[in-house]
Image (cartoon, rainbow, N blue to C red; front, side, top):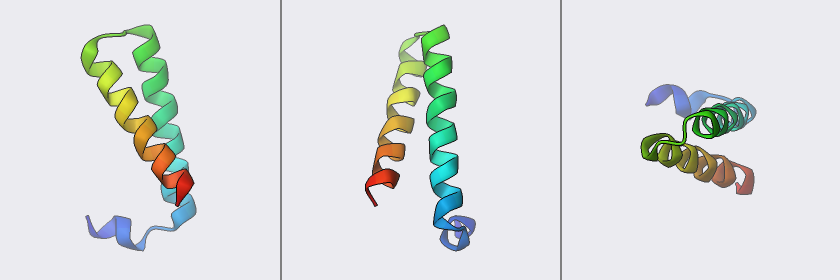
Length: 52
């Protein structure tokens, strides 16, 4: 997606952190397999962004 290439790194990092928080909350309240998978994916992406 072209917008991701021009977005500031701080903005992408903030979005990754917010996305992780949202899916952590959702998967805690509704621990279905699909919500747990999305929470894991969001955490992986956030951790990747933090390591970069």
